[in-house]
Length: 527
Image (cartoon, rainbow, N blue to C red):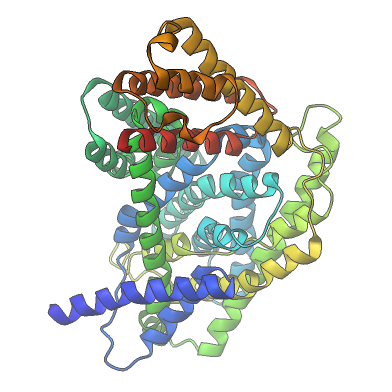
């Protein structure tokens, strides 16, 4: 037991070292983590790592989805809602169909139902990999938003396909009527349960006297409850977490009522997401011995299995390129009838989007979730080959696409193009002017008499009436501090309302100013 504990502790250190090296080399850390896992798995005497898919789905998937949903801008997503929906659902279905047809035609013994099992597993691109790569290079905001938005929903659609395909393999039949009803319930039930539980958590934060620690723990518990509750009634746990996370993200200032809760929660979540992302990608590489052992049981040559994996990888890349450029054609047609987010998408952005289809942990967990035996007691056909093909797809897309994507972005030299948003300088000028006006109006209307009574309070009034003075809050009285905190809250209210009603404001800039207000409040409380 102690040896295993030391081994797992060493793995955490490997994760940290690999990510530091990745940052130094400016490559996506999932690539180095998978390679590190592969190298470690070949060391003699290393304990065998057996990944339980339930652990990945229940322990890792909910917080990863929740963290992504909480970070994304709903305002941006709504702007690109049509293309995000098409890539998250329609493109995933088209990808699964393409993989099913090719697998059925070229892989011996693969029925169409088995092809859909494989298609459902490998169809969703991995958001973490793309995000890690885009951290080092600058891309237009609509591209990054599209990648983030797609990743929030494509896991749900791919797992729905997998569930239906598994039923078809086990029973030998597929009933469209039943599938339609089940599919509708998974979508509607998943979203509904996620929103309901998120609403309950919002009320808990509002009604009960929570502190910083309680707020942080409740935020960690929320995605697990959403996921488990939805899965218990056979709805989509992924959609439950995503919808609930988006609901709470928009209302974060209603349930995380203090700046300390927001800042502490953000720090905890950043560290937590860092650790679990590192673990899941390291586990992908560590699982190779188990996958190889299963492949030997099927009697399939190693080179032949690699060929199948590369074939499916090529299919995935081609379908994604077709979808990316197909979206351009649809946009050019539909702009004549409706307002579209980007009426002139060009040809460079689709090229980039088509090359960002790295697969990751969800695909591996889905493959591992295939049971060894079916309900009738028979062995699940080609389970080990499906696992190996999935591993080849993940490894190939991570290494080939992941390593070449930064160079591709550099060659394309994408520009933001014509944007509906104000420039950064104009937005900052608007926000600063509005914040000063909100603060001065509040102080002048509610506490004008204090200006004469308190020298330090006069400095506070001057801070917002004239210019930013760093020393204005250093020596405030207790009464003036309380009024200053109220002033900061009025500014938060103004910022959130301005972000809601002003479509030309970039939410990322607004969030930056809200963060500054939280930091200012903490500085005032500590000082």
